[in-house]
Length: 211
Image (cartoon, rainbow, N blue to C red; front, top):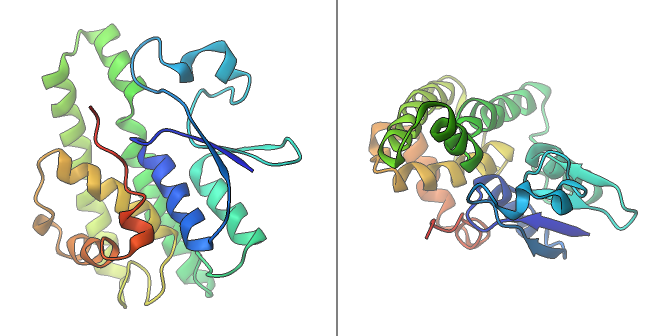
C-alpha cells in the first residue's frame, strides 16, 4: 500500500496514527500542499486523487481510498487488532460523531486551500486567516467538549479503549495549541489529550508545525 500524505496535515496524521497502532507497513509519499502552485493542486496528483487532497491510500490492486475516516475504517477491517471502533452500536456511533464533528465542522474550514480562497475572494491576510481559524476552532471545540461531557465514561473519548474519536481529536488538539489556545478551557479534551500524547503512536505521528 502507498500512503500519499503531508507531514503538516492533521488529516494525514490521523491515518499515520492508525497505521502505527495497527503495526502495518506502508510506503509513504509526501505531497506538497502549501501555496497556489502546491503539488496537490497539480494535474499529476489530481490523476491520483481528483480531490487534490491528502491523505489518500493506494492499495496494491490500484484502488484508491480517500478521506481519513474511510481509510481508517478500511484498515480496521483488514487488520482488526487493535480495534479502532468500540464494540457497541451506540459507542461506535458516538465515536464516529466525535470524529466527524472534528473532520467536518472544524478541520474542513482550516486547510490551506480555504486560506487561499479567503485571500482570493476577500483579500484576507495571514492575520485575518488566523482569526478565522481561531473562530471555528473555538466554536468547534466548545461543541466537542459538550459531546465528551455527555458521553465520556472512561479513560479516553469513548470508554477505556482507543478509538477513531481519539485519533481525530489528537491532531486537531495539537493544531489548536499552536493557534495559542490553552486546552484547560476544555477540561475533558485536555484530559484525553494529555493521555494520548504519552502514547508513542500518537506523539510520534503528530502533525509537524508549518515552517
